[in-house]
Figure 1 (cartoon, rainbow, N blue to C red):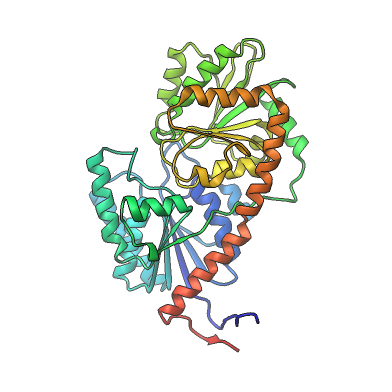
Figure 2 (cartoon, rainbow, N blue to C red; figure 1 turned 180 degrees about the horizontal axis):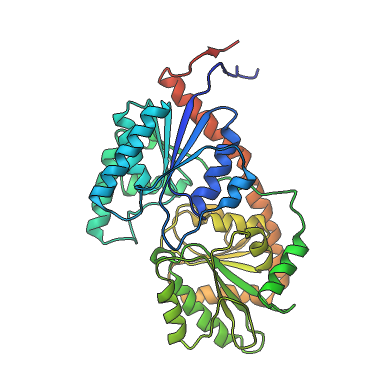
Length: 416
């Protein structure tokens, strides 16, 4: 017998708060999620001011129309006590005005400001998603410890938290002890893969033409913000070693994205006498820094191998995305990576800073198109089964309704 589905005469009000509305995992996951939930909730999405090296993913709003977004320009990544207080009161005012039944925060800064404001506003359901965390590899042990203490305090006013993997939940509960296990729900990211966009060959050819790739070139790309935690310096070392090992058919390398330490990465490339540009691959130039790219379909079809070199991760969307596009992945063993791919089946997971093994695994894929194809096929099957967007929507919706019911806030319920 199917359980009764609650029929609402008035939609619950859901306020989502993002750190920033920029190209990256938060927006790529949350915007489609909100779009699929809009039939069940009245939704407002708040977001903060982007950094100078970031761009807004307007393509998401073109694809997922009808969402209501509001920018809080004082909500910024950097810490500034005066600006942060102003941001807090803007968020608090918006929560009061919107009359939110649920406040769901994403990201560290919005997670702190948003949850405290929601608590002060008397919001019955306060949820936070840990897309990653700052408990190691970002700051010194002292600062990281202080952040963990703050997170434990905020955890007391958090109705429920979402971890993106079992490993991440274990870290939050057992290692850093920021929340009890019963408060954390594991909800895997869901990738909104466009099954109807199947013009694979045309997109791949467009990428090759744009960047001057020859038919037999093997393109390796790293996708994401160029910031210390992503460890692009390790990728530069890998580039140097792979170019020296492959003297005849040299692979082509792409750094997709931008960020604070791009000048440092460029300096490291120069120090190692590695030519690079932002235009295309040539016989002597085997590295391209593209900055931000909005057409990820073209990028993922154009690349042959996806690399990830992070020191810390939540659930890396680029790994999930690569597998949907049948691309093998070579990644460092950071955070939830092991939960997002199958080592030896859809790619390879290598311990952090193990340059020899990282390059060895990349070389295996560079030398074998058959292996790339086989791992790509397995990656698609794995990702399609595990990272369904519809599954993420269903589980998230059920969590919202369950928590609202526990708080007695499902107005106009008809259980018939």
